Figure 1 (cartoon, rainbow, N blue to C red):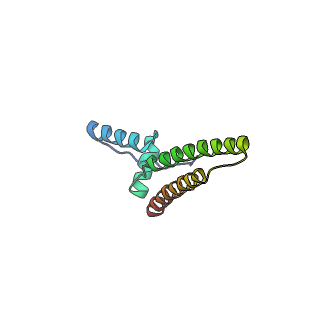
Figure 2 (tube, one colour):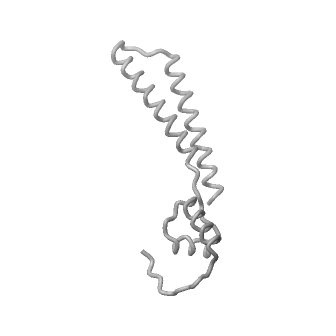
Figure 3 (cartoon, rainbow, N blue to C red):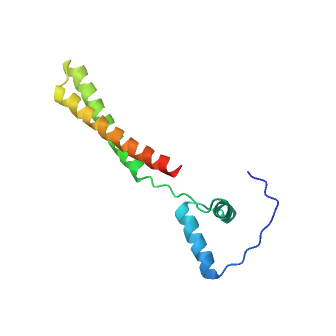
Length: 110
C-alpha cells in the first residue's frame, strides 16, 4: 500500500460527484482516492474489454471437448478420422487468430 502523506482538498457539485462515482464503477475502481490519483497523474483510467478473452475461452472449451472426444474414440477404436483432425486444426487456428487480436489491442494500449 502506498504511503500518501500529502492532502489535496477538492470541491465538486453533487452532479459532478455522481458522475465521478459512475465513472469509477465503469472502471471497476472502488477507492475514490485511487481513482482521483490515477486520473490526476495519468489523465485516464484503462477500462479493459474482456469480450475477446471470453470468446477465446469459449473456443478453448469447445476445442478441449472435441479433443477429449477424439481421444476417447481413438482409444476405443484404435483410429481417428482425418476430418476430425482437420476440424481440430481449424479450431486451433481460430483460437490463434483471436489471441492475436487481443495481443494487438493490448500492444496498442501499452
